[in-house]
Length: 387
Image 1 (tube, helix red, strand yellow):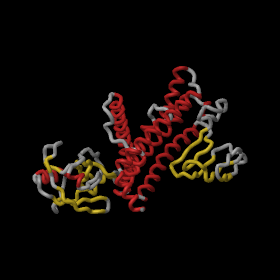
Image 2 (tube, rainbow, N blue to C red):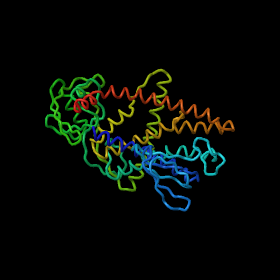
Image 3 (tube, rainbow, N blue to C red):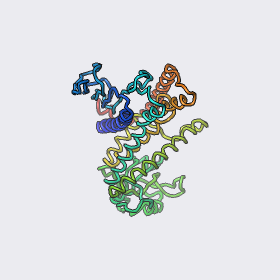
Image 4 (cartoon, helix red, strand yellow):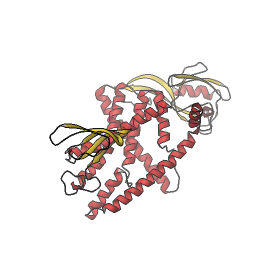
């Protein structure tokens, strides 16, 4: 559990820090003052800044810095990413040249969107690095030329609820090493072997991270396929590696494909809610994501790298929703300002963002409660170990 918590904090910190770094760099590029840029969330532990004479000075704790013409770079007590405080970000100091509020609608929109862009860039960097080292991919014949494949294995990519596989404890990401002592070259050969032995107890050897598990599972006729099976979807997986120049291209291409796929998934989710079809996807909040992060970390560093890239894209897409309190919501107010020729009153916009933030917090609490119910066995085990 400690590994899960530490890994989750590191992953979340990387994603949030990259997001805030995008806002910071774009503000500096447009000559807007970033009053403070910090690692972690306040309260501040300490910071450094340049005074008017150009000398670096320390500031301890949350003391206000009044003599800094530049940015205070700080280390904060809550190690969860970072934050940036941009001058005039809430509409103040409009008459000052280095204020966010003084800039054109286009520049303000770019500064607001920069965090989202940086999360996409981070994902591309992580996936490109993954392809240089060897990234887990389905070997479905769609790989580009130049790919080098190693460590081929048959991996579980889905576990059907209430199936023999779920009852035996099989999990997403497990690998099937052998059945009855037989190793299989591909998943079709494995499926044919299981289909021919409906009702017979089979000895499975399962790989899970560094562990090797032995399970006895009896195949049944699956309603979904009409064939014998234990209730899993499997795929042939291998570590796919490219030369560095091809890895960069593959990283960018894969990031764009994943971004589009996630956007379509969210569109289908929202459409289902609007038309009363309910939530068809399995949503996870902080607790669920932390649990998944721990599970992925146990599979190995390269899987965690891939998962972090996917989370970064998800964060980017969600943050650009045209919903109050999110970056996309703030851009929406800029679009309204452009159309009507004048900005929405600060008090009105502030109130709408506050309401949006409150609604988001309620949603987080609801999803977190569902996560705790779903992973209650994990929390019970932790409680038993402590007491």
